[in-house]
Length: 165
Image (cartoon, rainbow, N blue to C red; front, top):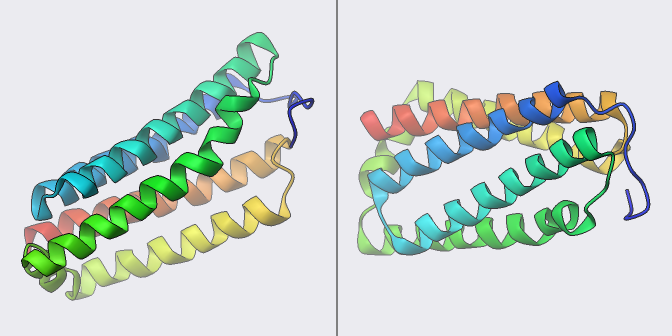
């Protein structure tokens, strides 16, 4: 993908489906933040969520206006790593402060652990798709978004279960 390519055959359904994993991640992040706290963790979650929603907006513009607003596509390569770095730092800070112990103990139960494994598998699949498939291809986008939705749904289930145990 580059700034001169306007993906063809993207649909509004694809663009809106792309919103599903972003919302699942947002919900999971709020639950996680509610469990362990921390401004840095919250900031990381917000950065990731906004970056994901801006990518959704990019797809909607591609579909409705047949236009590639390159900064909306490119921002995700910057926003997501920064957001995830803040999330990780926030979790480390929560661990140092002792705010992570109840969540970590809940994570060690079998069901949250299963959802953690599913999350890792789905995210690995998504990364593989992102590297090997053409991001302008509709079928590749559907495959990547299905992997992302499974991964974010699993992440949300893991967080819900680990937070409630």
